[in-house]
Amino acid sequence: MELLQAMTTRRSARRYATAVPIETIEEMLAVAASAPSACNRRGWRCILVQRREDMEWLYRQGGSAVFLESGQALLVCYEGQTENSEWDDNIQSAAAFIAYFQLIAHDRGIGSCWICHLPPKREVSEHFNIPPLYTPIAMITFGVYPEEQSLQARIDNKPVSLSVDRWSFDSGGVYVLKTAFQLRTLFRRLYFALPFRGWLRGWAGHYEKKFDK
Image (tube, rainbow, N blue to C red; front, side, top):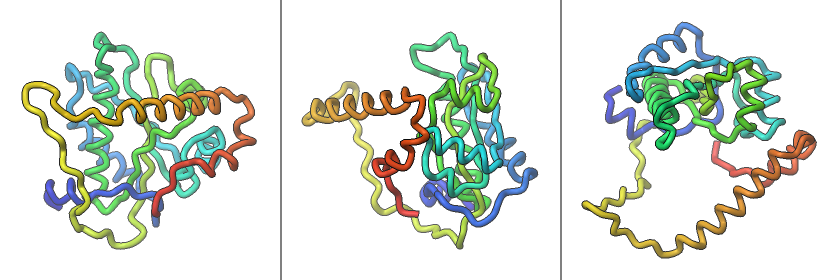
């Protein structure tokens, strides 16, 4: 698959036909390590999650319902310490790696979904034995596409707004959006602060964002 075709036809996939062999995963990780990283630190570390009890734990503790449909997921971690915390360059470096991995997977007929809807980082670190010097960034569920994937380019792409030299965009409605965002953030923090939120998982699922499979 040509690069531009892979970039324009990749879509998030939330269900999968079969698992991916470990050899293929290692090959994709080796290529994804070509991604840029701040100061060339290349501080990626990945945990392959395959146990059903771990997928169910992620969901029960407040993670995405996609985990219930997944047999494999990659937990991407990165060095937690950075001299440039103002710009979180460690998170940017991890994000570049994830984007590369998803494009490589798509090129090989493997669907994936980038997931940040996860339990609190401290719980994820404890559950997967991640040392304090590393921080979990996101998870990627993946697997072989359940059917032949359409290679049609996206037709509903929104144009990227461009301003030259200085910000010149219309800021109308920004305060309404900010208020709604603050309320959602508050409810999210309250939910994840509950020690018994596993009991409320079914209720919380009604408010989780739904996607077409």
